[in-house]
Length: 258
Image 1 (cartoon, rainbow, N blue to C red):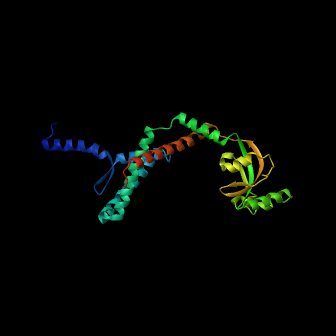
Image 2: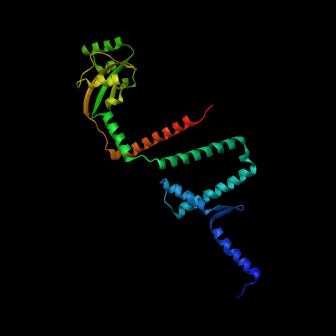
Image 3: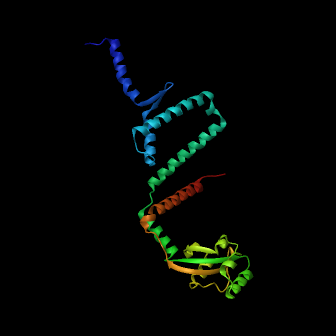
């Protein structure tokens, strides 16, 4: 059968239009919603671990896009997008999206190396040390107050009773600081604490930036440092954030700010 020119043109138009239509999941008041938008959102949701790619997820995203298109068309009719506050919000959102994309690119181009993670882990181990200390303290404003407390303790006064006058938040718990590494405290406190024997109290008040301390050492144990594989992700994240901070700082220094 030979098609007449008019029918031939109609058939060719239908053949071309069919795949174009298939690229859209819906049309709202003549405005098409491309299937590519659904694919993109599905990838984002799946990448975030919130769901798996499924017909149900795609249908849910499709309905959401249709609802948003209906709303944006109505907002455009009302001229909402021309308001100054809305334009400012759009500009802020645009900046955030572009900046985040640039930083993501920087992270991909400058990945944290395993050697850097190992070095940071070793540095942490060295800083923490191989021992943890369970200490108590009483913090007061003056050296004389601390001396008086030490004298009372030597005279038989109960630690918990005297700890109530401490200005530290641990006062309600007998000055208990729980288990911690010496690196957790200011140097003056750490030096005095590690010099004590179990159960001993500092003979003289210890001065720090917070005031005057009377320190009691309850016990000492081997430090519980998690193996590197357990904290590798956390270390990598910390190093990555440090890199980004340095990148921002470099850009700030280069910028001409008046």
